[in-house]
Length: 452
Picture (cartoon, rainbow, N blue to C red):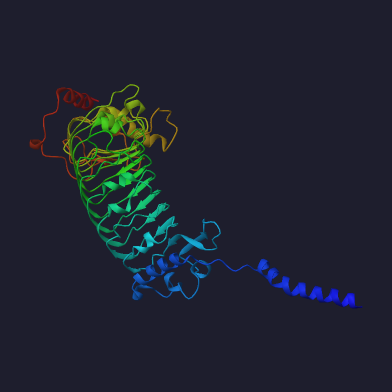
């Protein structure tokens, strides 16, 4: 009896000792947000004017009486600390909804969130200068501050060789000054969007950015040459958009050849001068070439053979609104994929090549397929506002409105282009006194057409 009582007592003692341990194993204490991370989030919340935080918004739900990683319903993402024996959670992403928040961006967001991989504040009214003297967190991969009211210079101190940044969006703000040359230190950056700011000066050398595929600086006041020398831009580039700036100088064929992967080149609305190099028309990868509203005065013909017009990948060509004189480039008719051609508002003279007319007529014949031709039809051919003369090719005269192609020959020197042809409608043909004399061969062609 004494032995049984002793065993019962020992069992009770064991339960008393082990019960707390079992409870600890079954229900461990929840991990908490690292204090420095919580303080950085609080600094961001305090920097936003309370009057711009709608009650339905994400920031309105941030209650710092609770733990952010455990209790905030939106706006942040957390992960376990990579440090050994640490029970803390670290903030890895901040993404605010576009609710119209207004305030400055505190430096603590960059300096006190070392594990931040993604930051999105787009579509709000954050304003003032970006923090200077503080580099981006080295693990930050994605930064989107677009569609806000940030101003001042873009601090070069944000960008360091240790950065892993892959995408940077600073578009539609009010940044001034130059494009910081320190951007070239970002060896992992693939997409850079700086469009619609007030940036000035030349585009710095970015050739060291070996991962950059998309660059957009549209709608600034940048100046100087942009494609004047090989190596200024990285060979990895797929798309360059630089519309509506003040870039000037000539386009160099060697500089284009140094961009073997480029698919889109858009320099519309600048002051680029000289000739369109044949290398642009025969580029092995280029699909969209937009050089409208510049100061170009000539087009170098691409060779017709292999490596020239026949191997061109161009789908769209826009040279409208320049000062280009001479005959229409015949090589365009040999480009197999070309579908949209804009040569309007230039100084082209002479007749319309039969090859152009054949490509336009094919659009009416096939509606996307079936002619058996080795090239795509022209779906769009804009030639208005030039000094073209002579007879209309017979294939053009057979076109009917709604036949598949958009064509305009208005405001030229084509007296035999009556308004009964839809492509002659619009501005009237130029006065004879304004027009140059057509070449004798074109006059003979017109005579032959009248005889038939």
